[in-house]
Image 1 (cartoon, rainbow, N blue to C red):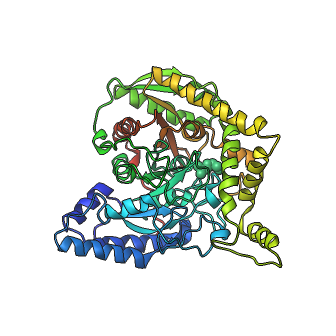
Image 2: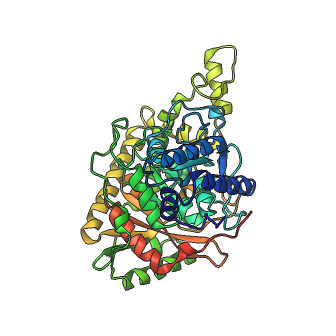
Image 3: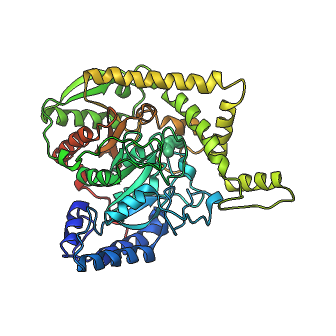
Length: 488
Ligand code: GLN
C-alpha cells in the first residue's frame, strides 16, 4: 500500500470519503505503525485496536449504504489521556486513576467521532497535565521522535510525539499553561490553544478550570484548521462554552498576509532566550515581512509576573479540582482501618510527587490569612496581563514570541529543579492567563536537529487570523515537509 502517513488529513479524508481507500485499511495501517513504534516512543498509554477497527468498519458500512462521511472520514487520531472516552481507560497518567473506565465521551471525542475520525488510542502525559517534559507520567515517559534521548515536552508530550512521528494524523491535547503549544514546539508540529471557551471542556478531567482548554496537534496548518472546526462550538454542558459562531477556519489557509501587523515582544528575544531560538524567530520574521506583514515592537510589561501568577492560580484551582480523587469513587483505593486513613493512603499512594507539590502549594495559597496575599494578588495581576494584551492589540493583529525559551532538553536534565521547569512556561503562560488564542508554528531546527517553534497569539476568537498567518509562513518556509527518521 502507498505510504499513508505522509499524507495530510485533508487528503486522507478525501480518499476515504470517495471510497478510494477503506477506513479499515487506513486504520490497520496506522495501528500497525503505532504498535511498532510505541516501545521506542512511549507515546501511547493505551492503543485501542479493537475499538478503532470497529469504528472504521462502521464508517465503511455507512459509506457502502450511501451515507456521506464527515470531514475527518477515516482519519486516525489520538487523544490525551485526560479526555474521557466511553469504555476506554482514562488515567491522566496517574496511579490514582488506574483502571478507571469512563461511562461517557468528552464533547470533543463525540465531535471527532461524528466527523468520522478513528480513535487509535490514548496518549501519555505528565500526571494530571502537570509538567513540561512528560517525566511526570506515573507510567513511563513519552519520548521525542527527533531524538529519543530528548523529552517531547509536556504535558501533552505523547500527543505531540505521536503526531510528529506520524503514528496518527493528528491528536488532541489540553493546554492550561502551554501543554499543547510547548510539546508542539519541542516535537516540531503545529499546536493550537484555542480561545478560552471556544472548545467545550465537557469530559476533560479538570486541572485548572479557568485556564484549561483543549486544542489540536497536526503536521500542517490546514489540518489543524480542520480539527479546530470539528471540535469548536457551543456546548451547554460546559458553562464557560462560548456561544459565538464557529468560523470557517480552513478558508483562512491560502489568504495572503498583506497589511497584517505582527507585534514582536522585544523582551522575549532580549531576555534569557536561547540563541538558536532567537535566531529561528528572527529568520521567521524575515519571511513574514516578505509575505507582506509589518513588524512593530510591542511590550507586555506585566508578562514577567506570569510564572508566579500562574503557579498560584493553577495550583489553587488544582487543589480544589483534585479533591474528588479520594479513593471512593474512581480508580485506586488503598483500604485502612478507618475512613480518614483510607483517604490518606489512597491519595498518598495514588498521586505522584509533582501533583502532591501542586496540591500543597494551592491549598496553602487558598488558606485563611494567605488568600489576600497570594491568590487575590495573583488574580489582580492576571487582569493587568490581560490589559497589556489589550494595549498591544491596539498596535498589532498578532503578537509573536518564541513558544519556549529553549528547545527540547535531554531527560533528567531538569527534574531536580521544579522552578527551572516552571520557567519553561514563560511565553505560553501570558496568553493562557488572558484567555487568548495562541499557536505554535514550527520555525526551524537547532544544530542538533531538534525542532524550533514560534508562538503566534491573537485576541480572543482570532483563530482565523492566526491560522492565516501560520499557513502563509508554513508554505513559504516548508518546515512541515521534514519528518523525523523512521523508528520502525
Ligand atoms: N507546564 C505547565 C504546568 O506544568 C503547563 C501545564 C499545562 O498546560 N497543562 O503546569
